[in-house]
Length: 96
Image 1: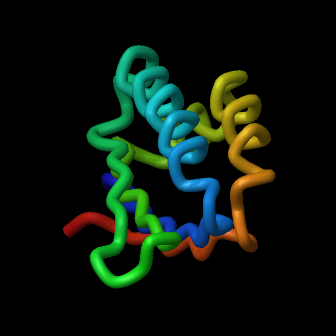
Image 2: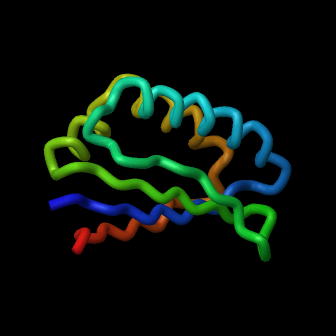
């Protein structure tokens, strides 16, 4: 069963460009290296300049675990840290 994720991220004011650049690198790595990932897309809120939502879908739990274990996810996730205004809100979903 496919697994969906909605990750809502609050970014520090003034850090949007840097955050978007790091995420662009991360999404390119995901698309190039993770056949179990169906999509991995960043969206910016229309009502808040500092709110972003990541929509993700993985083939199964193994694909999600593989994603979380990659070197680039760990490295680029750490690089995003200084730009975050708090912990992300993560919602896990089951595809129907």
